[in-house]
Amino acid sequence: MKLVSSFAMVAAMVIAGPAVAQATSPSDFVKKAGASDLYERTSSNLVLQTSKNAKVREFAQMMVKDHTKSTNDVKMAAKQAGLTPPPPALEPEQSRMVAELRQASGAARDQLYVTQQKTAHQKALALHSAYAQSGSAAPLKTVAAKTAPVVKHHLDMLNAM
Image (tube, rainbow, N blue to C red; front, side, top):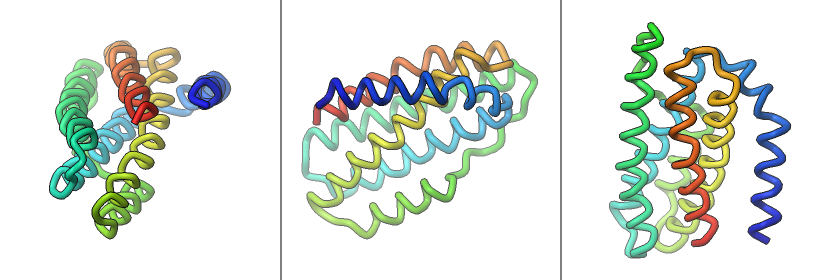
């Protein structure tokens, strides 16, 4: 099952990856990466307030740490590329997912969190992988290439939960 889902994810990235990068300007990449990181931190901090599940708590703590770092890395790369990065803002789908998490409780919240994290990390992996391959701003391509394996590791951890 994990092999099939990993294959499907890679196939989707191969098919959609170049299209995502071609349609993603440096400023769009910075905006999307910032929104992704903000969602990761927001949802993880929310789950940390109530979760009793040690694995979920450990993962959420790692999300706050790792996605704070990636936000800072993207900001620095954006400045090197001559951009002024805007403050991160959630996209509508991310706001909806946070609202769903707020309404859930207990083990149901933990399960919803893991499910949402899988979706969010698949999208983040596609974004970073595609920009690393085909992006137009060298500093952002470099940070995307360094971030993609971290996001892939998070996804692997989620799939093992």
